[in-house]
Length: 269
Picture: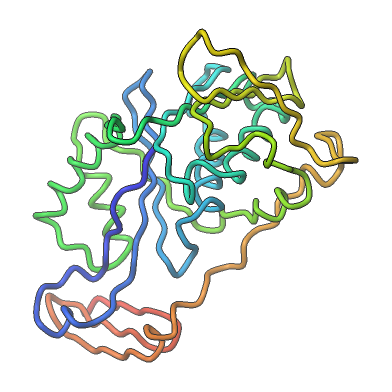
């Protein structure tokens, strides 16, 4: 699991757009090593940010969409605390096991400098395609991504109203201070041990597991509120500087207008 470098739209190179602010588009890749298939979760900054809530929401959607028939899942990702290594992703791990989506899930965080994974190969393919395609709107990024690989095309997942405020659930249920998640290299959650989670600081089989119950006092997986995930607000306002920017450009059959809190890109007929 990894995040692609931000893609800006519209993809224009003339001087007017060089000094203009563009829309940021995000792509989270989840690669299944068993089948060599990749799920590309796409959204833009007008829908949500690119933090722990969004990454955890993407992971939940892919896990619940028949990612694999197997009941045990191992996820490899980097040490980025803002996206992968945080309590929101941990909450989704617990949720997936508690709700019988999986029997066991393990997160392994790669050592810095040694974090090359299959997602990086997928990103190279997308970047090569981007050199010949000039996406103007987020929908064209989805089209570009789906056409980037002819053998086993990427599975494009459009994240629309699929984002959840998982951080609010974490505030209500979890106390992650005892596990020192910033130093963890391996986290394991299994149905047999719930509500206990197991943590290691290395990948060595010689190191014993450290076990923690991170649920707050009076909270458990059987609490009625544990199943309630509040959706994030539909969309989010763009930054003030983008609100002040108004650009009209007619090029390549498109009319681009960045106005108020919304970015409009209209294809001219």
